[in-house]
Length: 192
Image (cartoon, rainbow, N blue to C red; front, side, top):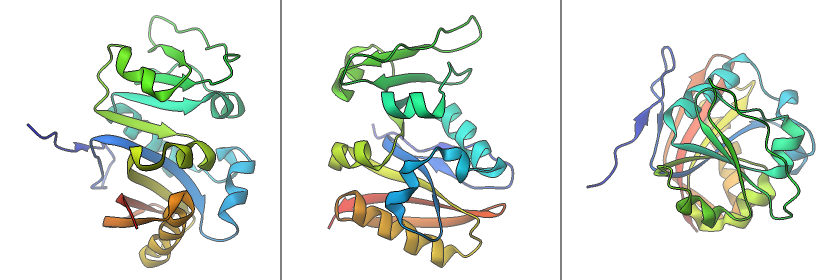
């Protein structure tokens, strides 16, 4: 039986998390996309984007990120989602989980997720472009916030550019919706 998308609990916004691996990202409307991952998300993120992050985490089975992202972004155990950190070098030390938080688990490769015994039909990928591109066609969906952009067509153009950089992908089933001062673009990606 096919899985149905999960609704994100956001006030006044019809957004959903589709089954599979969904790359969650915030990008600027202008500038080189490659420069986006040289800094932390704090340089682009705002309250609306952080609200989306929490809603997406509540809807997913687990979050996957890299050791680099977890370190640079200062990841802590989450109250709403298990976090799996892919650490190919084996040097990452997961933060302690408390009684009110979900665990942070480190693995060497994303393929190990299926061996953890955790539901993983809805995976939220929070990583930079390098790891997202390395996953290739395993990423099925995009949930991209275009920061400080109120023009849906400009946001879709920006996410189309991002999909091309990710691996020459095209967008399918694109929806762009206002998210306060941002535009949220939801799409499936397919090989060109």
